[in-house]
Amino acid sequence: MINDMKAEDIVGEYKEVTLQLYKVGPRKILYTEIETPFPEGKLIVSTTDKDGNITHVNHAFIEMSGYTEAELIGAPHSILRHPDMPPAAFNDLWDTVQKGEKWQGIVKNLRKDGGYYWVKATVIPNIRNGQVVGYTSVRRKPSSIVVDECIKLYPTLF
Amino acid sequence: MSYMFTVSPDFSPDRLSGWYIFNTWMQRQLGVDIHLELYDDFCAQRVATYSDKIDLIYANPFDAAMLVREKGFLPLVKPKDQLDEALIAVSESSPIAKIEDLKANVKIGMTEDPNVNMIGMMLLESANLNNSNIEKTVYDSYVLVAKSLLRESNEAGIFLAGAFDDLSNMVKKQLRVLLRSEIEEIHHSLMVGPKLADRRDEIKAFLTGMNQNEKGQGVLDSLGFKGWDEVDDEEMEFMIDLMDTLAT
Image (cartoon, rainbow over all chains, first blue to last red):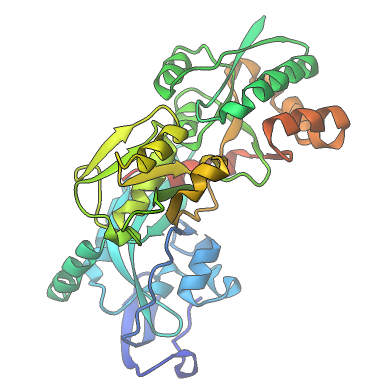
């Protein structure tokens, strides 16, 4: 379950856009230009089921996303989808992990308050008794050089 | 029949006698002969594991993946409130104030500890550092890594956070922590190999109850542990998946 973003949750001036989320449908996104720095030394960890619905989040995930644990559990992981991220990146992610392989990329994530944060994301399939039962996603602080490259590259991929 | 027990070589030298006491206690509980074999380095221990010599191991998280997925080991317990975290430290007098001040070709001191080095490199990654643009020197112990910083042979060092905290106050006063990981998901585990697998539940039960009697608590004290918490298969699989994401 995922709701449209609400103006009362947003901090600062915002823009509005509607995104088509994979397996979810349309979502109204309200987003700002306010960046939250990645917390030093931490990892943001989450797991999802096979359809990408969140089954576990750690404290860093809750802190950085701005949502409560109750809002996150059961929500699609695309609740973090930022409009500046090219859809091709997520198509590549799903194609890769559904083949049972590890995916890695630099991702701009959306916060509940409309702000954003950059991560180096790694997603791996959870294979139990030979079957993919879900996915683990671990996000860490990215290299600033790589983020600068992505800021230039991503607008060209739409 | 006798069994072989080993401990990840990253244990604190102060706990050497504690592991022998623990081994004696284990033999009494299980009623079998268990030989404690301690290896000087991670490579020698891995060779022994690959040769199927090991039946019981206190394993670091890096080796846990190989033990579970290639050698059929099963998790038993983890020490209470003891997580594997790493930190980057510099000499107190160093001009380096934050992790981003470390530049390409920086000299880094470290041990062979594979999971600590992996977490340490993750901490350095945000400063645009990686294995190809740092000068690494490997030492036999964290004390020697600390000394290399004091002698200015290295500009920064990668430490197991617990080992850094155990350094003498005199040494610690001359060092400064730049960044400490807060992963909170990675830990050492006591694991059982295929030959002892049929006694897994029994071993788990007496380990988790160890802190409830005076003798067991005394053994735990000698290891510096408050007690043991059970690790089930899914928790171990989750940690292995998480380590896998950090490997690149």
